[in-house]
Structures are given as structure tokens and as C-alpha cells.
Length: 223
Length: 288
Image (cartoon, rainbow over all chains, first blue to last red; front, side, top):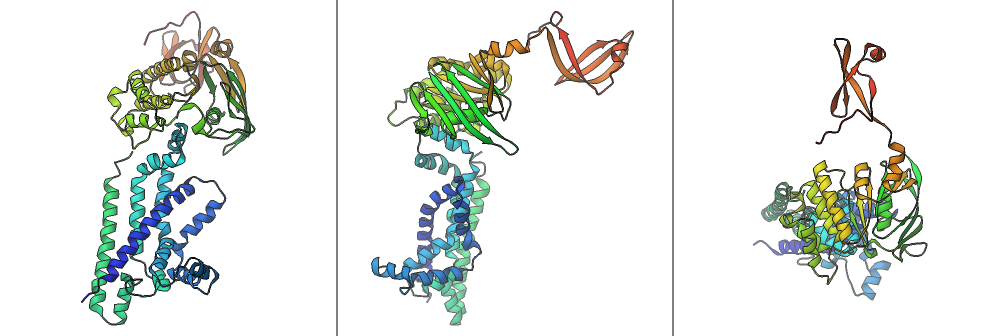
């Protein structure tokens, strides 16, 4: 009998991660698209790190940070009562960091693609930055936001290294589908591994298919 | 009374120069800022609107200080309307929504109906910006800039991309609203006809400095007017006809035929650049 919990856990993780990323990435991408600060290059480099770094490196540092024997980890543990290593909250934090560039970069280039005069015209009409972003900027970069959402979701669904490092394989807590596959193979249960893999392949392919369909059909929406 | 005193170092890819401008303008004036591209004309508008920051100076509009050494009002706080060169209409909103967006909270929508009527946007009001022609976009942009009843209207070469018919019509719209709403208007332009038709005072700008100022007549007519009309062209063809020659010269899009004697042609050949000069008593004016 196939255990469905890794699939449900994976979807839960991906949805939550995507939602948190959306909230973080809009202000971050806006700042990156318009700031002339010297700090900008540093922040951009940090945001992009997960693109090139092996997930195990990120997972290793997070594990150290979350460990109650480290300064930060003990602060989390004793002061805030948070135990992040080998917990669902821990892998959510790891996933948010790991998928950050997939959300930030499309939204940032979306913001950049809009002429600066739109922003300026809105300011002159007396509107705040906040109102301008929500009423003028975001509605005009719907495609970029959709791309960000889907890529971040798909990337989280497919992650393995970070979760394994900081989450281990606790059922219903941290055992996501990619780890379940690894487990089943180790136990020589190729049948189950096959089903899990098929499901993962199906989900990610469908998601990407939706993005590209949407992308190719909605180009004429805004000119 | 509007007093403007701006200093800013402008850097472009190949030059650095000081923008140094002093203007004193009466309420209700229509001011032209005239000059070559790269002279800093648009920057002046951006500084007045608060989109760029001066290095030092003072902007006082009808007794309220917008900028000095201590105060620097945000664009949101300045009673200013601006028409951008690229129109800057919000693509996600219809024409009417673009105007409604400009309303301040709690403002009556009466002004929008009024502007739609004056600038004749009735038929366009439910269209999105991408469904509009350049001239139509410009009209919407003008109407939107007026929704907040600004004291000062800034026009950044609003008509340069339009054909003549459309331009004349838009000039009329602009003049109508300028009078009706008692605006003080600044227009950046390098079209002399526009300066004469619309404005009552000109600042002529060269590399960041005002080189001349005054009424359009005093600035442009004293230096440019003479008994001659001149145009520059290139010789296309020289044709012998009896005792004279017919020389075809291309100037802009026009081919002009000029009679020349053998003696006059001695130093001229096909492909050479020439000036065609016509004395004041022989040209005739034909209505287009």
C-alpha cells in the first residue's frame, strides 16, 4: 500500500514556501529593480547563491545554525522556543531560502521592463509608493509574477538536498516525496519508487506546461 | 509669482555640464523652454516636478516653497501636472480608469466628466491605452495631468511625435485648458511655430544655461529675420535648356528647379551642397 503522506507533505511545503516567497519577493524585487545603492550588488549576489551552490552546502550551514549547540540555534531554542532542525518549520525556512531566486528574478525583471515614467506619473498624481506598486506596477507584470510563483513552486517540489540535510526523513514532518523515493530505492522497493517518481514527474511537467502555454498565449495581453 | 533657481551638475555619457537656470514667471504665463536636445530642458521640468533633486537652488510657487536648502517636497506633495514624452498611461486601466486613478481620495468625479468633455474623450473612455493612437494617448495624458487641478502644468515635448494636423489640434486643447484652469504652463519644445502659437515668454537654453529670454518675438524675430529666405539642398541634375540651365535641387523632401546661367554653373556640379536664396519680393505664398 502506497503511503500518500510524502505527497501531501510536499504539496503543503511547496504551497507554504511559495506563499511566503511571494510576500518577501515583491518588496525585495522592487528594491532591486529601482535602487541605486551600492548594497544592491551584494544583495543580488546573495539572492542568486542558491542557483549555483550545491543544496548540501546551504543545508549544512542551516543545520549548523539551527543546532541548539550554536549561538543562533540556542537563541531560537531557549528564547523563542523554536526547534528548527529536523522539523517542518525548518524545511520551510530552508526551502524559502533555496527557492528565493526563482521568485525574485522574474518579478525583478518584470519591474524593470516597465518604463520608469509609469512610476513617476503615479507619484506626480499624488500616489504613494505602496499604492503605485499595487495598482500600477503589479497588474502590469502579471505574467512575471505567475512565472515566479510557478517556478518557485516547482523548484520546491523538486528539492532534495536541503531537506535531507536539515530535515532528515521524519514521516509527516520532513519526509517529502523526493526523499521518499530515495528511501524506497534504498529498501529496494522499486515499485513504490516508480510510483512516487512518476507522480513527481507528472506534477512538475504539468506545472511547466501551464506556464509555457500561458506565456505563449498572453503575450498580446499587454502592449 | 513663480521663482525658480536651479543648480545641478548633469552627467551624460560623453559630457558633464552645469545646469544653471533662473526663471521668474507670472501666474498664468505660458512658458517655452527652447533649445537643442541635451541642453537640460527636460531636467528643468523634472526638477520642478520633484522627480530629480537639485544640488542647490530654490523653487517657490505662488508663495509656497517646494524646494530650498531645507525643504524638498516629494512629487506627491507638489501641485503639479506633467505630460510625459512617452505618455506614461497605465496599460492595465482604461482611459476613464486612468483619469479616475488620478483623483485624490474623496474628490468629486465631476472634474473627470468635465475633462472628458473638454478634451473630447467620450468615445475613447472605455478603451485601453494600446487601442489608442499617439495623439489620442497624448490627449488622455493631458486630461489625466489636470484631474488634480495643479497650479503648474509641465509638458515635455508633448507634440513632437505627432503629425501636423494632430499637433495643431492638440495645441488648441492645451491652450483651452491652460486658460480655463488658470494654469501656469511650461512646455519643452524645439518647434518655433509652437513657441509662437502657444507661449508668451521663452527661455532659450544652451548647454545648461539660459542664453536668451523674452517674448517669442523679441527672442527669435530680431536675429532670424531678414529679407531673404534660405534653404540648403544638394544638386540632383543639371539640364541644358536653350541659353540657360535648369538645376534640380533636393532640399528635405522637395525637389526645387532653379534657372542658372553657364557662368553661375562654372563652379557647381551634380551632388554638391548649395544654398537656395530667395529675396523677399519674389516668393509667393500658396495655401496648402
